Image 1 (cartoon, rainbow, N blue to C red):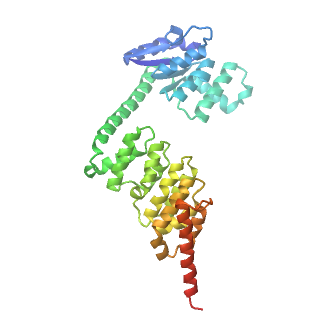
Image 2: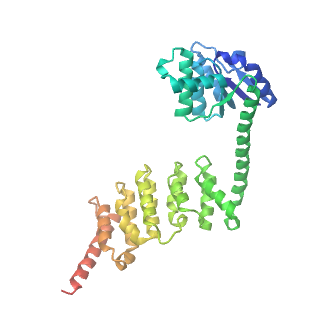
Image 3: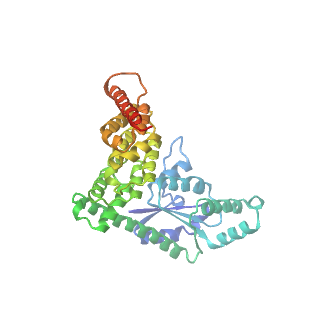
Length: 364
């Protein structure tokens, strides 16, 4: 059953019956602290604030109503809990109170308002509208039922739209295994799925694979994936940059953005995956732009040295020897003469010999 909680000061008793009537008309269950319909625990450490937080967390919708009085628990506990929990909620205000608030804010400094309820309501409404930019719907006692019903219907409409979108997503996931048959509309939906931080990792990776297969990811989508807060998605995207990003020749700004994202990441695996992918996109840009990559981690230095060695022929052919040497010196930060470090030093000597030979062969 749909549980809807009425939140407000003690004077909300004036509209409690109307609230209950509309709520039951939706097939819902009205909750209001004055009728005892809240979740509570009577213990040695019990508190009204604790009971309110517990009830807000359990409710499906919260309806905050402002009549004439200020409710401490309502605005300092229940609203904060609803915001923190991402709970759907409405804010309804008696029109005479709202008009008084507008008049006071225009003509009287807040600290000069003598009536405490008025002053605190002005502070609350200012915080809701100006600071949090929340929408307040007004009503009078004759229209409360209609306004509450209308605003609640809007929330239910949004919920149904989200449910429809969930069903679409579920259908789309079933199609991602055959990317060749995806329509343009389905590819657009796959992009939206791939970058949705609230979606499960498996579905997002399936969407990324489909975008790769169809070369359908925009540069903006690629950067969004590289910025993902989900480590598995971010690592997967970094390991497939060359396949995701299809613009050739590559935009130097895009490569710089990739490097900046790797530098900002606390995950050392990101930089390791980035290096070979940038070389796949463009050897020259890789050699010229990877100088700005943070190479504090030994695995990244090893990957860079290996990539430079793999592309030695292209580096020589494109006249990038000096830039490659500079990068290789950044890779060699230890004194061991074994393994990849030894090969790296040998490679440096080999390139330096080629550079020297080229200089000696130039005419006087």
